[in-house]
Length: 232
Image (cartoon, rainbow, N blue to C red; front, side, top):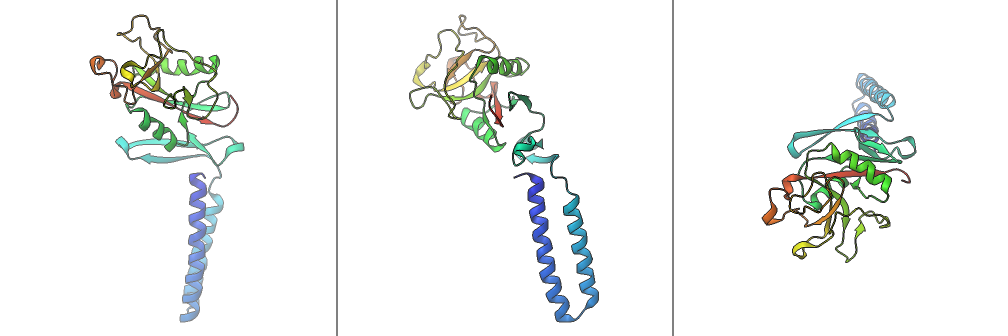
């Protein structure tokens, strides 16, 4: 449900309350002027409801870091879904890169809070598109929406695991705690054989490797959200 739709509902509720309260009080006190005043106020509120746009952009403020994010209505076929206004469209889906450091669970929750999920990459074309976004980011690596907590690598969206782009020697489940998926923007200095930009790596839930903290840490990883509105 869009912000505008919610506003409309509250305004209609206000109209109903005004009608009931105004009529009851007016007739009880026999004050025609009071009834006229309520009628005028109801007319104004109803007019506001009618002129509210059915789509467009509305502002929502997020508490964390006092960040304000602009939302816009999705395509007409999915008017009840909103996405971040500056998300990038590709293949019927929308994508946005975030450079704020979070562990994997917090990143997935942040995407869910915006109506999406961590990105699931299911083809070479989608990999190339997401890689082009990562290339202009500021973090060392970026979370993708997959884990192997069940024993097999799976996208959290339930999409088929039909494509992968692992860095050389990956996944290796280092220290037996690496069950979450990330994409490199920069080359891993501790794995010279890895191929840098766009390659995948398995890592712990907080992206922390104690003896490699100058590269792997929660503060140095970003994430990519995806919104689904059609087939890729």
